[in-house]
Length: 396
Image (cartoon, rainbow, N blue to C red; front, side, top):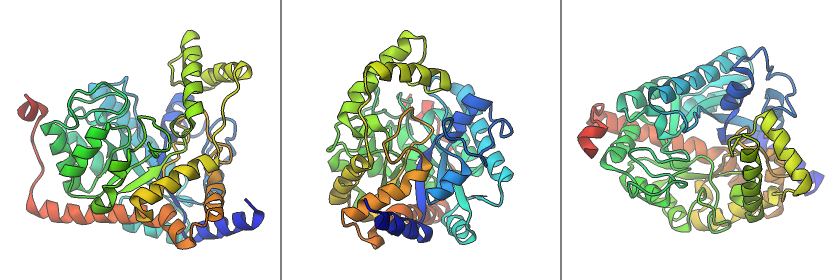
């Protein structure tokens, strides 16, 4: 890419900044500092420690961030609910700490207001249905606290939905899983289908009254990884109105990186770490492993290959980006951290994406999908009250 393309990219992002669908900074702050914003000053350069700080968000042209209020699937029941509440509390504390730079966003109008003010709209997404402990009242409580999407599963199944990386149990959604989707529609909470099995994706698309999102998933036809979206599902998005937000996770987008990460995970486990750990101590193990087994490098071009394909199948009105920064040990060259978005936009300009289409990718599509979910919620809320159905009642 040329310096002229980078300049064009930055100009475009000044007008249509990035809405990033997924950033795991809250979990990283839990692991590294017990959520202590004095211990890790996000107004300072945190390069080498985190993928995210405020200056790099601004340099990357990020105008809205869905902060993931993720909790590990190793946590369950009320412990998972409590940990989710702690994650929400951190995001609110982060916004309160930097009111001149961040704004809590609960709606599409809030996103637009933040952009007009030059602040970064801060939204929240819960990653995994285990966060609600199979309770629709807990789902409603998360919405009242500001959560605007929920990923139906994480890496493991929940009692009412199948994950992409677990053995099928429900065959998609159970009856209670369908009720979760309907209640999310009534609330205006986006149904996030990243991490779910293809059968769960298809089932949710049949049930939902509102557009869905994939907060951080790429194209399965480009790399046949279970975390990616099959073409037949991408082809359903125009009728649904949803948005697939391409992710940057190397092992999801580059086959050689997938094989390398399997070998690296074995090295982590041999040293007593969880196979997905990326704390500073775990990263030392990974870097030592990398010295003897060089890591395949994904690039901005790798991500652009996925976006090109997704545009062909779903159309440009149904695309976004969800980097998964601070949720992964490694990132693509050129997308090393949250400051890298201009490099991706410049790559797409080189591939003859129009500025109008890029503005949809970065900003317009994500704002539209949240506004559409809000419209559905107004109609659904007028037609029916809160569901008090339980897992036991619907699934036995």
